[in-house]
Length: 291
Image (cartoon, rainbow, N blue to C red; front, top):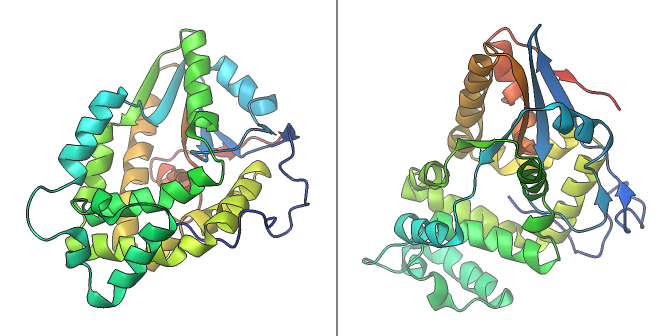
């Protein structure tokens, strides 16, 4: 969940010029290997600002050695994605979203919309989880963070240029389905937490990027997964269950020779329910690549 002070304030412990152009970043990288199979695990932040030099050193070396790039999902074309969003994330009947919110939270929600310049009607037919995702993403984009600067986009472009196969661990429909499967009270709680944390968006995203760039997965995981801890039912569906499935995918892939570069959200590679933890249940060990 978003949580921060102001976009201008530096992250705790970060020097004031931390994100001036071409600052060296060394995000965490792990490797799982046997005699004929190597799988790299790279944690990403989905949006970044220009100026961080991360696709170099060990990360670039690992990518260059890999035969295949694996992402959380391969994005469908914009028209297909929009159709999926409308089909999954919006309703055509019943009370509006504002009417479905408990009375104590309605004013905070409508104030949040006004603060972001969003007409209430724009999300009237949205399901609570759809509104929560929009309200968590829009402030980040307004601060200058860009999905096109994110590692997934950069890695996918590099793979396309080198004609490397790119596959997804999930589909967009599956990902939307995880949110949509949440009971409505949980969806509303998700939205409430998002609205509550909006004032902290700027400092939290800076803290995330700072921890990521310094290769500190524990600090990054604490920030990224805060809401999952607060609402364990949400965390189970959106985090730990998916990590367990991905670990099973990796264990199966280890049975075939080759080298694979997997890039997933960094929160999945941190904490007690991380992919690495689930890999241990398959008798596999992910080793941190030091560089």
